[in-house]
Amino acid sequence: MWPMFTNSLRLFLKGKLFRDPHAVLRRWLIGFGGAVLAVVVIRLAGLPMWLAVALPSLGAGLAQPYLFRDLKYN
Image (cartoon, rainbow, N blue to C red):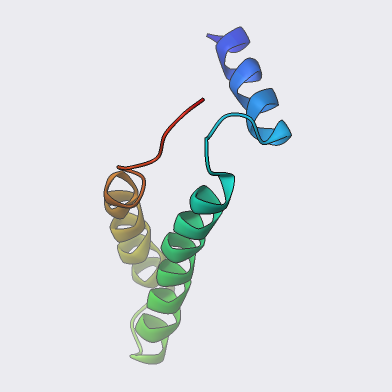
């Protein structure tokens, strides 16, 4: 398991894991930005911090398969 992880990490850092690394970054930023925006909005609504982190984390985690569904590996 560890060699598979390190090999994937090495390929990712070299930019050779995905066919279009810019699409990966763009989709990751969409998920991250949405989660950050949701945290800010929930905190401004006056809800507790634990809820402001838990709900967007759940939402961002559920959105990952949808965001990354069309990515192609090398």
